Amino acid sequence: MLIVAIVIVLSFGAGFFFLKERYLYTFLLLVFDIVYIFRLVSIYNQTSKTTAMFFDAVRNNDSTLSFRTTENKSLQTLYTGMNNLNKHIQEIKLKNEYKEKYYKALIQQSATGLVVLNKDNEIELINEITCQYAGISSASTNMKLLRIKNEAFYNVLCNVVPEQAITFKNIRNDSAQLLLFRATEIKNDEQLLKLISIQDIRQELDEKELESYQKLISILTHEIMNSIAPLTSISKTLYDFYIKDGEPVKPGDVNEVMVNTTVQGLKAIEEQGDGLMHFVNSYRRLTKIPNPVMRLFSIEEWIEQLKILFTEKITVNNILFEIEIEPHLHFITADKNLINQVIVNLVNNAIDSLLLIDTDRKIKLSISKNRGNRIIIKVSNNGQLIPLEIQEKIFIPFFTTKENGSGIGLSLSRQIMKQHKGSIGVVSNPEDGTVFSLEL
Image 1: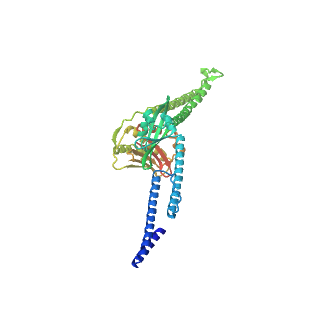
Image 2: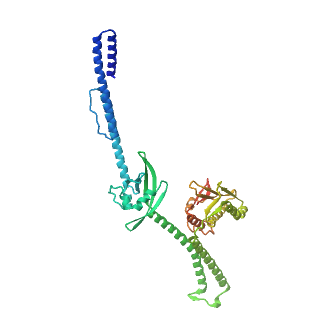
């Protein structure tokens, strides 16, 4: 700034003396003016060159550039600023390198398999557990090794898409793994990447299956013991009637009371036997559901049939039966008989629940489509709520809270929905009442 001021003063001075016709002073001032102009141009060129050099270094990630001290105060201020900025960039770079190493170490030590693919399905990053799943060395730096060594595994990585899960049976060293692949999209430097997580869910599924078997065995044991215990008691009572001191009683000693008691005991044995047979038949029903025959059927016609089916029950018990169907929804593709079995069971359960309250009894049947174009059927009621701990058990075979219930209705319904590649669930709370949701 000082040099610029000097140039301006010298220019005005030379002009002033020129007007006064003092040419010697004019010449001297012009000489000094030209000298300072050259110096100003030199500083400008040096500044431009230095600035360009600095930004080139930044662009090329060269943080070793440093500017020496100079006697020119203007350039020294610029050099000091650039050196400080370069130092700051170095610190940021070191922090980023530390974070990158930290996250890479974290990914490598993760118990979950992690892989990053770019838009060309090239591997950008793969951790150790994924290498173990794929059967390749984690020490290799060849990112194409996976495709060569385990093409099936690589193809699953390429085919999995965000918001979708894929299971893959992976055979390694004569042992089977059931791997679950999930993907999500991330952006890095404007590049779209796919982050894939991989988990072995076989053990988890085995534990769930074992837990289900244990619950089933517990309920089966409970029901069978409940049926057999009275039979044992009755048999012992009749035995004591006819065996005295280890010897059978004489025919003449048999009286009318003994005969009547025997008849009643045999009748009780028959009833208990029938109950046990009914239980076994229920179990056979549960394990022998026919394969669904998928057909397109009219919702309107089906609903009219359901109305006729339940008219008497809902009228006698003073129940309001509401039906809500989404506009423009006219047909369902399913096995009508099997789905009808599920709905009838749910409505009957709803009626039983409503009988436990005195007034304002309501059942609502709604049919709609969700965003995935799946059919959603809901059966709701405002009767007695299902406790949370019971909600977790009601789909277990033979579990029931009803005195005369078989405990297979909801379990049967779940199996029917699974055969339709659908699902059934329940929500029971004071705000919504009890809502059973079917997804087809």
